[in-house]
Length: 595
Image 1 (cartoon, rainbow, N blue to C red):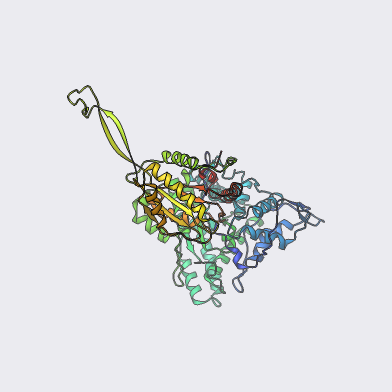
Image 2: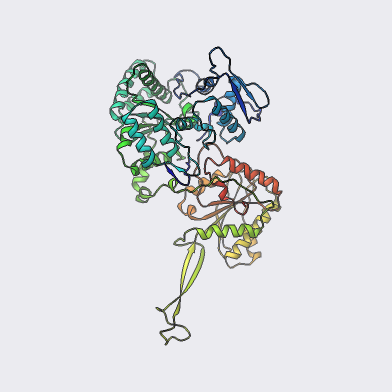
């Protein structure tokens, strides 16, 4: 861990809300008061049945809610909010569900964090980690590790490898939590993990696993038995081994499915290890759970097995590359699950990495990101077109030049290697050398959702026309709502205002809702688009989802003009608060609105 600017991670796809009923009534929850409760430590090990309806709610209640209602001897727990209303287990469980609904609910997040800070022995209230990452928060607090923030960066060299060595030398619950926190803070993978001390410890698990499969073989379907037998052939000689269990949340939920049986047996073995270590002093803890996010803990789409000794012996570069590959695979839109073959999570990503030397040598952007979570002060009045253009030009000048683009400029310098044009015979007079340079292209995304009026759209286009004429460049352009128009290169360089206006009029507007995440994914899938300076012109009526998506480094936002400024400021504040878990410095991407 180093004290510097923060790195936050991408990519949690919080999707649990679809599996059971959620109350539609929104609660205004800000503060809680717990009395007569014994401070608890949450245990991630749960035993969902492998037969019957797949319902994670009872396991969530037992894991997350019941510990908050464990009373002091002879007392009864009481949980009330700041309005004096009492909350029972069902109400608290419903509150947890609001934090896992797929979109960051700031009030629910604040309420649950306040509750956990009072009810848990170890919990950091001021952490930027979401409730979905409660186990990472708890492990970090127990290990006295500062959570990732404005000046804290975690890395393989400073944190993961030393934590793996410490766990290898002292395999107990304390060192296991430190190892888990280091992995979670360094990489934030959206998966369910299980760690094993050594390859030999994993072989011991495989022997136990063989016995359990034999016992269950009489009731297991043929396809499940086939996959379990293939799983028994896996070894853990490398850093990790990872599998895709489900292609979506409705997959592999039937009785005795491979996903249900595998996770059940991994949890059962972790419980067995935990009980043996607690019952017999001096017994080594050889495996455990890595509950990176709640959504994967109770409905895992993927599972990653971690070799602790391999992490302790590996180089920092190798560890970083392995987890970067895992995160890349987790974010891949392609999820293939076979009924006859094990679906390796990183198989496709490893093949792509092997085929592309550039991908192998590319350094992770996460370790280079700069973030600041300073207090935000918005302008009292809406910015003018000049304010936005000045802010955009400042960003553009800070970016590196590129080999080729639509944004061309020329530099003139004096040199004695060329003759003076006015007096070419006088070698004591320098000539001039003109060189052509290229700044990054400009790509504009204009919000055309239902909340944007025709007047708002026209004002946005007029601002873009002024920008194009000032820079004398061609512009890449998309309109978007919940879907995106086809990308167009507008030939605006050297044209008049009326000519540029006609160029914009030819482009169809996309109506509908609002979704910024499609823009992020669209940019991230193209190296050329990543290099552009991208600007979203919007009214900010959108909130980030709770899962982690890499926010493009060169993407900025500007407000629509001709709209109520107080209303836009409220939407901007909500957007910034909802997206802090993706980039603590997301406010620095707002153009012309921060004082």
